[in-house]
Length: 173
Image (cartoon, rainbow, N blue to C red; front, side):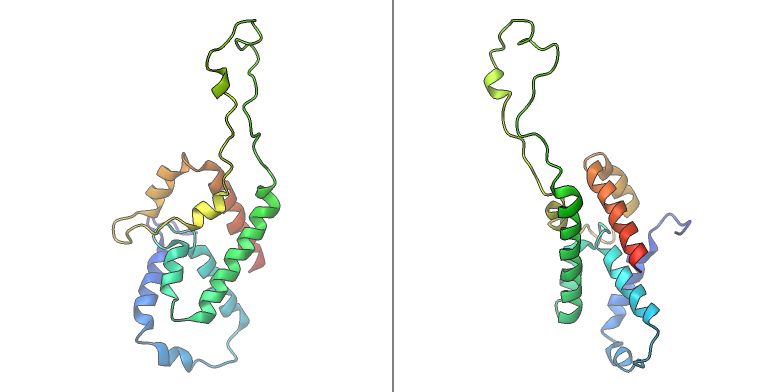
């Protein structure tokens, strides 16, 4: 973790990607006997970038359109996240119909003229699919820390899932 107020990982990624077009030949000439820790660190950083509001999944897809092996790796990680979500969160469904509240009008013997609308089904969403469909924010104007604080109240459940996902990737690396 850094003590700076600005997130450095996404800025570093953006700078690296901007220079990457000029450095393709140099990268191709890297020795094949590079330490495996280096490759694991690069893979781990790409996984974390999916959660940055300025890059997101769509940004990573666009970023690696001409690199099919990296695009396949990103999609494989998306599938792993989907499997993790299905295992731990997909089965936890909300009740489909509203339940009567203790002390309600029905218990008091009174009729409620809007009761026919009280039993509407809830919208059962897959928050992970919603997350992957979010478009990236403007890189030069979005502050990820402020964005996450503002978004926290709207998607509190998603943030607890993201923390667990980040922890599971940190343990794997």
